[in-house]
Length: 316
Ligand code: NAP
Ligand code: GFB
Image 1 (cartoon, protein in one colour):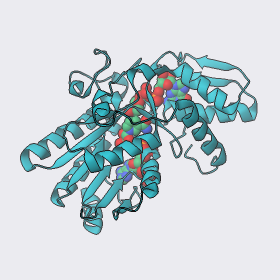
Image 2 (image 1 turned 30 degrees about the vertical axis):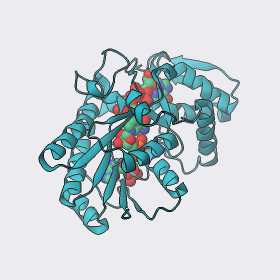
Image 3 (image 1 turned 180 degrees about the horizontal axis):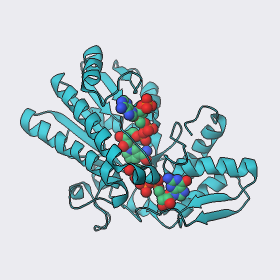
Image 4 (image 1 turned 90 degrees about the horizontal axis):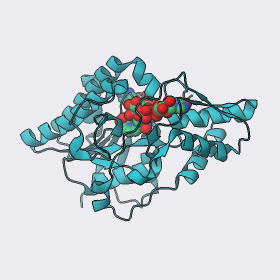
């Protein structure tokens, strides 16, 4: 089989770093991997995006680049999340089309599904109603990725598809307390609580429920999709609905990973955001019935160990 030139956008981030790790572990199958971030091209610029594709001439693309953030960043910047991600996604998919890319796998998120629908939802529910108000800007921009995938396929037969991960965590995450997601926020706060002998503060009531996946597990599935999944229908990648846990339970895992013995307090002045977004992973299981997700206690321990070791260079 002809060797591929695989361009990975957003490669310096949480998911992109995991794709780099998994790609480098693969036996050399002769593919050329090109890992890029905003320092290589600002993908909000059509000209810079086109120049990037002209330079590397990719045959395949894993498109991860996005303006990303947790609940509290989304609450503040819904317009920016919409405009920035619309520009990035339109530029990248158009460049894939112009440069005749064989396949592009882009990235949505389970938080873009309609709020308050029957759970667990599946891929067919993506456009069945408004998303949770906390991140409507991000959600509608991401849904347009799916619309563009379908439009490029119907008009030009392009094989552009997308993966829909649930909440992801792991090394190289954004641990910034204002902008990041829950788990990296809890890992950062756990570090400070342990170091300064202060209470470990969980924001909200701790009762919202989430399905969490380790970045390395997601990366393995994304690389599999690039090679083997040829449907335009997006695919949810998540642990099963039965593996959904509360934010409180996730916080307790972080406490155990630090062997922290102090107080856990809940700052209920902070928003809980979406209560749940339980997703079905049945479609994924039809293709990968034996795929094993890393046990969460182990994955959180690896994330905590990475953060402690890399505190000085971690994004915080
Ligand atoms: P991240 O850690 O914030 O990384 C974002 C990446 O996108 C970085 O490499 C960043 O480059 C790049 N980027 C941002 N703006 C750019 C621009 N204008 N031009 C070029 N590159 C740009 O995000 P992540 O968590 O890895 O997310 C990756 C993908 O997974 C996103 O599409 C996200 O929506 C999706 N996802 C994430 C989660 C989650 O829980 N984290 C859940 C579901 C889906 P710089 O480092 O140079 O800024
Ligand atoms: O990951 P997160 O910020 O976003 O989780 P979502 C928010 C939930 O975790 C709320 C609680 O219930 C918060 O009150 N929480 C507890 C914390 N401690 C913390 C903390 O230190 N930091 C943060 N951030 N939350 C996002 C979407 O929703 O899901 C994004 O807004 C994205 O667009 C992401 O798609 C995957 O899971 O609520």
